[in-house]
Image (tube, rainbow, N blue to C red; front, top):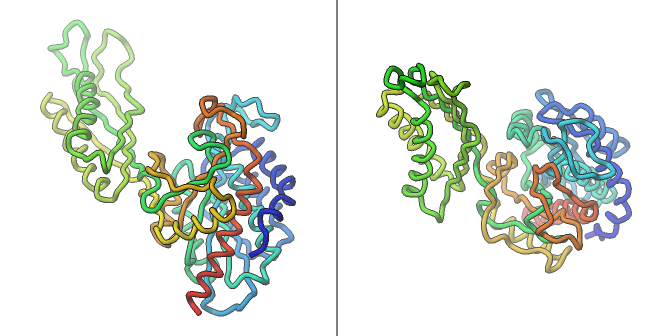
Length: 406
């Protein structure tokens, strides 16, 4: 295999500059026209088959390998997400966001730039590749819908046949020590669903609560009862995380409101727990409301599945990434509670999602801010290594898969 680490070091300045330009102008959701244009410009001149999305501003690029080309040659997909967050940046970076209320607070500028770098590295060795590579530049990860749009538009079949393996990388501004890489077999991240609830009572004057039917204490009881139910009905070996992020009621201290509104996220780590919790939460909310003479309208919205890595592919990742970074690669003991719509790709094809640290060397782990924070800092130093990891995973996968096919 080529020395991708050395070649990535030679590209680092160019790709770092691209990262800085993306960071200065973050875009949100599935409509990222300026980001898309930057990616297309960066890929211009490479021998790629490039298509753009219809439902979103996605970019799909196919690199055709030339070594031992055949109709059934293997295909590997590499994915990088491109969207930012509605956060006001407070990092003080020299290349900080120039858009008020917009920030690349989850490192997607790094993902996008390093995937461009990987495309350049692999393009230089395209004649040695015994298969094809699909580069998936995805909008809308933060709203957990971009992957499904790209899947519906055929990203997995972009090379003419379904991809055999898929890989995604994600950087972190906290959690992991500088320079480290990790993933795990099986469930890596949680499913994410949303529950929106209206509890309808009967409004009235605060001086005469017996003349109305106050939904506020019902809302409070619902919030507490859900946590109790989760603790009593689900094993801590297969946990569920419920976060009530919205709880609204009323507008004046002396008025009993007509209704209350709740919104909560439900995170599960297995398909079984995800399926079981849905009716239990719905029944609990409706039952408590009914017991108090109120009515509950429950809107349970399914989001994305758990992110589940293929164990055999994770073994492969350990050999490849461990070979590049040595002891700085390790297997993660427990899954993370966050969610990823790359899960929808991994639900269809074998693959793996990997984490790497964006914490600057020498910085105390106590002095870091987690992804999505206004002060989340993602260092430039890992950029070259991330490019090399992308390229090595694709190249070695094609070699291994073509040998298996042969």
